[in-house]
Structure formats: structure tokens, C-alpha cells
Image (cartoon, rainbow, N blue to C red; front, side):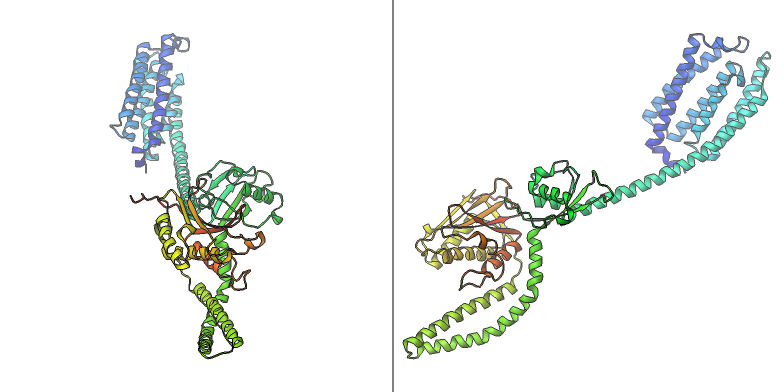
Length: 540
């Protein structure tokens, strides 16, 4: 039961404390001997100074040896303690003999030795030490009786002291056993609690939802990895004011504290390519009105909106896809019939009607293709692309397809080795759609249109981005808030799905697209890549 103390730091610490007590006690005895204070309390006929001095110096010397033994630990803990306690009992018995026996009261020091024995030995061993000590007391009294006849021997007091030693041995062992069980239980509970805390910390850090604990005065006390990713690693840590991390989120937190029921539920827009966040607040300590901590939930608003859109368009997508398949067959028949009519000798009015039929059939066919493309949209496979080299190749293809001159398509990426993670074919689709919108909706002729793509790494967030900018008439502020919604269009020839599909493709590659109003006019769409790819060395 006590073998674990052989290498226990707790046991060695207790043994050192016992040796400190032994050293202090031996120094005390040596001091009162040197100053002659023993004679003041002990009669001369029973006092033996030579034996007292021998016992005191032996006690002090043994404490020094015991200290060295505890440092080297060549002997186990329990054997060392057995030597210690044996020395204590023997020295105290010799000291008692030198100053008159049990009546001196020095025998009460044996109680301390017996009680300390219960910390290292089981009950049976402790009772054995108490019995051996009682026997030693009796032998000491008998030896005194025969060697110093002038000293009166008190066997009754000796018996009472022996009884006390047995009682102390039993009580101290019982209490020590209970304390040890309580200590073991507390340690097990502490380990379980520590394991639960570690598990909770792991769960919180691996959650996809951002978690923050904020004090009543706006100090961040805990933040998980998802919250750092949503708010940018460079600015968030614990014990930092929330107002320094995100002033808008802090204002929303104060608003919620003042009126939890009427706090704003709108997402918070972030700059520097960071995703918009949807905050939520919950009081951790509902019973406290002051100094209560608040649990802040942060979610990517774009992902929430995407989920809502997916739920809303799931049934609509299946319906439109089935309708689109049903429309394509009669639409093909109408288109074929109109082509046959064009080959006939028609009157000018009939030819004009046939042209209208062809135009509207092509428009309807384009709508059907967009709907089918939306229903078939799949998640891309990101690959690392050098964005400058990729855009140069794209410019050649696009300008050749749209009959544009190369100087009308300007590329400015700094540094040139900026790379992004994006599906190459889907990035081609996104840039093509944005450039086509600039070409067809700018209100300028193809000779006057200028497309400028610039980008690199954002200074604030150190995240890659590209801006697709044209010199057209721009987008009205009211319209700009709805341009990414499905089936929203201001053109009689459009379907309202182009920018929505573009946004879906961008977000499926863990990126973000925003419209940026330019004070000088024109249209600017910024694609921010949320992840931080590595920078590759530019080809020489």
C-alpha cells in the first residue's frame, strides 16, 4: 500500500521537513547546553551533562548525514525513514536518561516521531514502532533504577506514556489513511477535470463556428481558432479589448448589452478580403447582473447565406431543371422551323418576324443553358496558379475571341510571383463572365472599352486579391446591393443568373467576390482569396 512512496516527491518532501525539525531540535538542545540553561530546570543529582552533550551532538551530526542521504537517494525512502525514526527514538531515550527519565517531560517528543511514522508506514508497522518505543522506555527506566539509585523511577508515568504512544499510533494511522484516500480521490478528480478541460478546449478550437468569451468591459478572455480565422490572425488574441480587434463587433456587443431583444441581426461587413460575419451573443452567467461574461458566436455570413440560398433554391432548381429539359426539345423545333423559313423567299415584314423569332429563341436557349449550368454546378478542385502568368494567357484568348486589342486589356499584378489556390477552369469562367459584363454592359463601344485587372497581396491582411475594373458607366448604389441575387437583372436581354453563378463558383473555391464603387466611375469587382497560399519563385 505504501510502496508508491519509494519514489514519491511528496514522501521525500515530508522526510526533508522531518529532518528540518530534527536539525532545529538538536540545535536547540545544543544551545541550552552551551548556555548552561539545563541546570536551571534539572536537579544536579539526576543531570548527566556528558551524556546530554553526546546525545545532542550525535543528533545534530545525524541530521547532516540524513540530509546528504536524501540528496543522493542511494537508499529508498522507506528504509531511510526507518533509520531516521530509529535515531530519533534512540536519541530521545538517551536524552531522557541524561536528565532524569520520564518525569522530565521530554518523552512527549516521542509522540511526534510516532505520528510521523504513520505517514510512511502502515498501521501494523506503526503499532510495532510504538510497542518498541514503549519497551525502550521501560528498559530506560530499569537501567536508570539500577545505575542511579538516587533517582526515583516512575513506572506508572512510563506506562501512561506508552499507552499514549499506542493511541497516537492508531489515531494518526487512521487519520493518515483517510487523508491519503481523500488525497487520491482529489487527484483522480483533478485528472478527470483536467482531461475534461483539455477535451473542451480541443472541441472549442476545432469548431467551425467562431467562439469568443468577452468580459462585461469588452476584454477578450478566450478565442478559438475559427474566430481568429474569421477576424484575421494578425489582430486577435486573449486579454485584448474587443474594440481593438473589431470596432463594429464591439459596437454590436454594446448594443446587445443595452437591449438584448432588439439588437441588430444584420451581418457585419469586413474589409481586406475577410468574410462578412454573423455575430450572436449569449450570457454565460444569467444570474449575474454585473461583471457577467458573454459568449460570442461568429459565423461566416456568406456560408449562412449560401445555405439559405441552397435551401430556397433546392426545390426551385429541381423544378427549373426539369422544365428546362422539357423546353429544349420544342425550342429546338421552333429554331429549326425559323431557319427553314429564312431559306424561303419571304416578304420584308415576314423576314423581320423570322429574325425576331431567332433572336428570342437564342435568348431563351441562353436562359435554359444558364439554368442547367446552375443545377449542374460542382465544387472545384483548387490548384496553385501564378495569377500573372495565368491572366496573360487568358488575355490572349479573350482578346482574340472578342476582337479586342491587347492594350485594351491591361494586367498589373504586384508582386509578379503572387499565386492563388483556385480551380483553373472555374477561374476562367469567373474572369470571362466579369470581362463580358464589362464589355456588354459598360455602355461603350468595343473600341472604347478598357479592362484593367490589378492585384497582389493586401497590405492589411496579407491575402491575395485581384480587381477586375472597366471604364464603363458603373452600377447604381441601389442596384449594387442586389446584383448577386439570382434572377435579378436590369437588362431586358439578361437572365439575372450570370453574377449569381459567378459568386457561387468563387465561394465554392473558398474565396469571396465583392463589388467596389469607384469614385471616378466604372465598375470594379474584387476577388479576395481567403486562404494564404505560398509565394512561388517567378520563372526567369
